[in-house]
Length: 144
Image: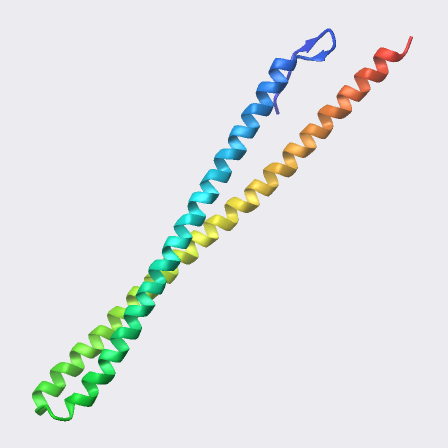
């Protein structure tokens, strides 16, 4: 906890003001980081949507490939089925990786948001304590 030196009328205003400025800067930094992570989450969600579209495209391609595979010789059918299987695995892997990455970022964002709330509560408590000290000083100054 920050300690402030005393002056004739209470705490040193410049020190208190500098402390408040530092707290505000730190809070703004946290908020900027949260905003940046939210932007990254949005970007990952768009990327995930893109991969879902790719997956749908691949599924459509698989269906068409299966319809035409009836007219292809047995060897060609086996090769195309291998390609289809690989495409399904790759599409699922890509989507799963994007989902995991988005989930991790969302978790980090939630943690940062919780930390900001805790920080705000602590700052409020500190400010209330400081105001109580100021009130006590005013009472002491009024007494003969």
